[in-house]
Image 1 (cartoon, rainbow, N blue to C red):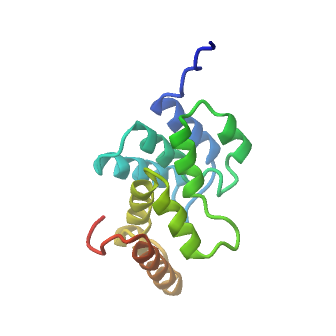
Image 2 (image 1 turned 60 degrees about the vertical axis):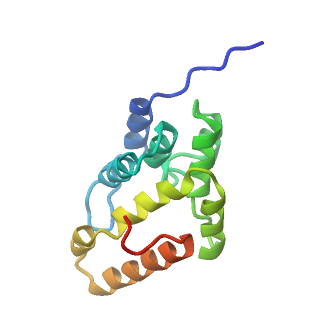
Length: 156
């Protein structure tokens, strides 16, 4: 019987995620790592466990091509963390309803997406955007996804 290799620690996952997104900025020009930190903190504040926190750090890595799906497959992460990351990774051309259903049907993924949406839709964060049309479009997009996921509007 072979021993299970050690899993990456939360600190190691954070380091990997920060390095993978190095140089990237959000739509307001802020370092992308700030968003990752906010989502990980949001998962923690909502009672998420270490696997969900790890997934929060990595939630955009595959979608943004910061890390490959092959990297994720080989990474020393739990199967649950990997499943959550893949669940919250949008596919090109994928209907929002399909995306939401995958998130809802993957144990642990809804909490990660809820924290992601909470930070994305944060009025203070959206206020940094100079383009009113973009701000309005994103606000509507995030509200629509919350509705598809069955998240109450006031809960964040």
